[in-house]
Length: 87
Image (cartoon, rainbow, N blue to C red; front, top):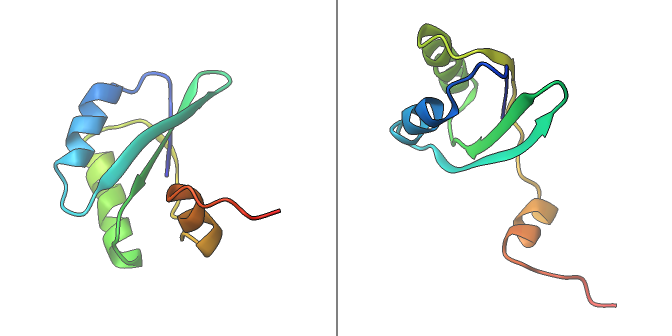
């Protein structure tokens, strides 16, 4: 998950990320005041690979404000496949 400054060239960043091995499900989730962009994607790398990914983004001068990984839990997986809880 990336939080980016409003100055980000979002199309360029999206093209860059989709060319990296393992990156998928790229989604611009929402825009935070004062215009920060939140970009979420799936990346299967471990902590070392995530650190490398952040270095790549910084080398390309993308204006990253926050970079964090989030592991999916069962609830996330069920929501993705459209599972609803019986009442």
